[in-house]
Length: 108
Length: 459
Image (cartoon, rainbow over all chains, first blue to last red; front, side, top):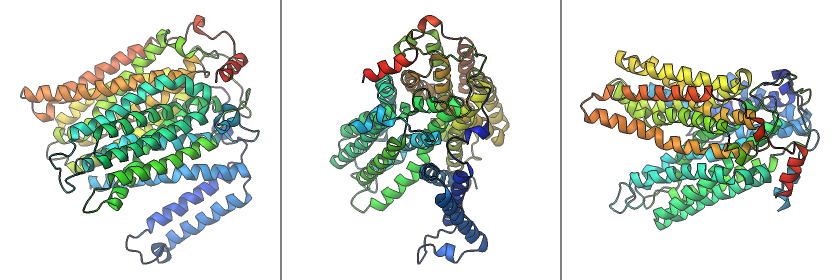
């Protein structure tokens, strides 16, 4: 335990937090929108998204923009952080989502 | 291979320490598959009979040994290879873990193909167990060195990955088996091969991006506390010297008792919930309860380890033991009054503290023995896990059976077990209470630059 630690300083090591957090949030939005609209019987890829509602499209579009913004304007280390956290975060989030969904279904 | 050498992993200026948790997660999310190995058990009892078990098919009781061997070897290899992991650096350890983990799956696939259970025991149990031990401790000291201001949070993130690995492995295994199964075979061998390859690639990403901090590195703006806390040392204790300290063995019992209390109910959660609430909790809801427990097990690892940075390690364990004792004592009351919500809440909090116990202990060791050999000392401490893996289920299963055999209704058969768990936690509380700062006679004498040079020279 130290006297100088703070959540703010934790995020300020060699990177600008916004250039990591915003694209990661965007990536999460893209993945969430894709899962949300995923259909087992889709006739073509992303059919659910293409034919889906406004909220799903907004989430996907805003996510792409946020991700692209971070990847284009971020520095090399910030891009590496987005890839590294996305790499481990997406499968983990999908697994947790799947488990939570199953748990809720079973309780019902 | 120079790529694996510790000196090749020293971070260049500008490297962000936030790359280290995902590197650690790459390893822990993969080896955390061990918690989901049970999804293979039923299919592996039908390798010959396909639709149902044939007389020559493997029995569930025999298959249970695969996981038991793996967990036993985890503790043994973590203790045996701890110093090698510490001195060789995280990349060499992660690479070795990846190689063993993938080999374990491939050998097991051969075992399934040849229908030789001993080959599976050797593959997943022994070789995979070595990967579990080395992989589990490989990022610990690196994370602590990168996050001197938040060691609990940093190691909590990695160890959370071990709890979360099952969430990925379970649906992936089921999907792969469904994909490879046909009318002539169940698809287990092919699933093992694909998972071995996927896990090797995933773990190698972690091995590639991991870095150790340059000597003398400190986080930007970080100032070590001016007043030294009594239970946080700035000295180091050599790995085998730690075994001579009462603190090591007290923390060993703290971990062992905390894990014993949790691991026993994890294995029995489904049956226990159905038997304590007959007719009200069906098998489906019980499975949902187990899923929720897994989520709290994972979340508790990050939450409690992070909290320990604020509360202190000893205080965090005090919370585990006091709150755990109270909650275990409440469970029989919840069962007796038919209060399902109270029962579920009690176990979710208990299981979060079970995970929290695993995740907080590396930082506790760092506070006691310093950062130099914390990974290796952590490896030695994991033998407590192996021991708890035997104690916990034995206590729960045998006590329940004893009371059922003596005519106690199943709904009440767990009551005494809950009180026994509460007593175990009281003993853990006392062990934690006795933990004091390590005596200076155990400290390493050549501090600290010489030690690093000595450690590097020992490679």
